[in-house]
Image (cartoon, rainbow, N blue to C red; front, side, top):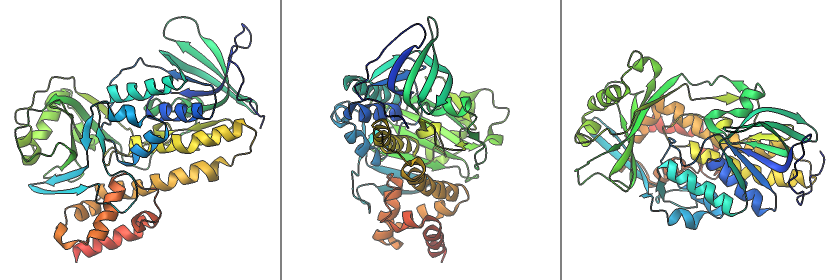
Length: 424
């Protein structure tokens, strides 16, 4: 692999186009974190972002593990000052049965609190911080084609106004999320092993009057009749919340009025329906289907996939942003080493370590939908040992790369044993 000089200047000509050391596709959390980490290592970074920020995005409940990656990227102070909703745990309810996990009571080392964020503001904040550190972000530009070689990559970029241009890079990181730019262009997509599920969601003025409602926790509600249907309620600090319902796509067939569909599902639950009885649905309701995805490989000749561009599981445990930031934290130093002439084993140093945590999440997502993990969560807490509870709390807090946690090191065996313990 050719060494790319970290002092290489940006150039432009009519025949060769511009040259950058690293091109990052997407300015969301993965792209912003990766760009900042690469700038810290002295590399010149160009970010190609199809949309104009701020823009709406779903997935507002962060996990405490995220805070370590935000700190690593030098953005923690800005996030603390932004006024986001404090978060210290996750609560679950099913037919009046309420339980919760406090993330400060966990097995793993690291932060135990985080924030619930309106992603338009949060993503724009991280992107702005990456720009402050020297990354160049080109909003309204999209990658139309890519050609890879041993020397780097050549991208055809199309602005939303003006003529297309060529951009050459020593390395490309795809942080395009559900846009999945490189998987589409390079024929890397694979079907997910998860069933096709649909989420219907919006932001509301929640008008919650229940003094017992804990706004410092995400609330996950299970449908009273169908345990594979669940709801999220993510409070924000200004009396607003994100609310959504998730289930197999068949449950939503023929429901063209999304607002009526969402409100009808909410009213089928005594827990959430009562809590949101005064809510004002003042924002268009959206639907996302078939979001679970997989790829043939997370890396290739001079490129790597970050976050949702590589794989997305399910929103139930808010793992998406955590996985995205972890992938950026793993990939950025490897890109830097490769640009400086080292030979990198991307499978051993990136794909396998990243997948280890993703697979832990996968076990618990699967067990949620088949009911096993719901049994554990709603098991009477006074009968569970605090040590086991703290280990589960660590996983829900995002610490799925901590192999010191037995429920991470052996997720299938330990979870199945815990299910049997609860049943007995």
